[in-house]
Image 1 (cartoon, rainbow over the protein chains, first blue to last red):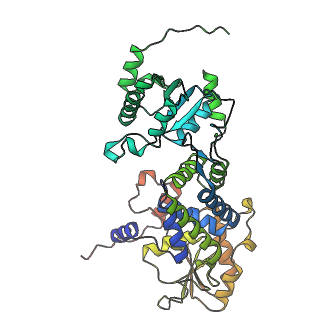
Image 2 (cartoon, rainbow over the protein chains, first blue to last red):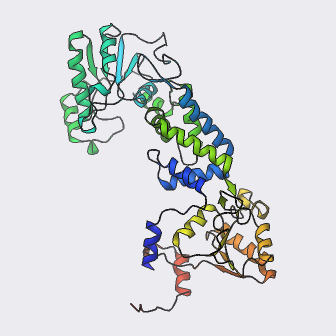
Image 3 (cartoon, rainbow over the protein chains, first blue to last red):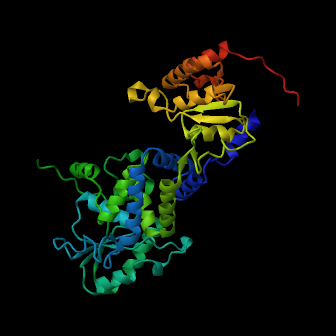
Length: 216
Length: 216
């Protein structure tokens, strides 16, 4: 009986349909989607929801055909210039450098930033074979040299690779005279000191800020 | 500052591209896929993997165009009859009644069954508005009346709805003289008695089986 459990755990899924098997196989190539999730999704599409299947086909085709990369900031865009770059009401003097499009969205969601962006498309990571040449760094230098901003905010993940990238960019930008800043480091709102890492907690003591009594 | 946290938690995602927003929206209509997973998936497709995007479009289109339902057992199939129904080497005397295509796959993976199937397409569940008429029950009765099997195995989830369905089907099949069996109930292999529910554990004592010394 133990033998049969082993067989069932190791055996590949048995499909009664080649079309179904191929669809599940293709879907499970997506990041974070395993065979079981792919199967559930495809069966849902096949059995209940032909409208949704059509809509997904249409929107993926539209991604392939119409999606552009903003020629100025490298954000994902519907046009030559993205909505943020072509928004005249935003501050032209601050440039926020991020590694990915998701970071642009995260910062936009805070409603605390009204400047422009520059998407690097990753961070310098020799171990993954990503050097400065693979990133949108040259176009960033050009933008600063053209006087497109007075301040560059390095909004890059505080990992080893991120810090390396910030260091590299600061060096490159040194001669332009632009002000380079980074996001404030410290304890998260709602975080618990007990679970904060030593480095963050230690630095947040060293860089403590004066307490301001609320005036409400 | 607390206010800003609230805003960022409640605000909808800010997309710089309508095409991207629509694709994320469509994808998040899939069961078990939220906005964040949809965004990660769509950005992956948009930025890194245009081959995969094309493959997904092709396989979904193939689902829409080519996938069929087996006219005999209602399993998902590439042809009029599914691979299982058209496999001459399988036993024609046993019919395994399951609620969904996934259950067919689960049973096939055990390698312990060589008969045919009948997929009901759900279980009787008045609370969800699913009565006998919404399920493939009439075609099951017909198959049994045509003498397609001597035994019907009710391989249906042992839930209240499942038990109701088994009861309903047994009643319907009573006059045909077919033998109706259900899957054995008891403690799972590898399960722990401590965590088994009382009903399963209690019944497994009442329906205990003689221990057979292994002959290896």
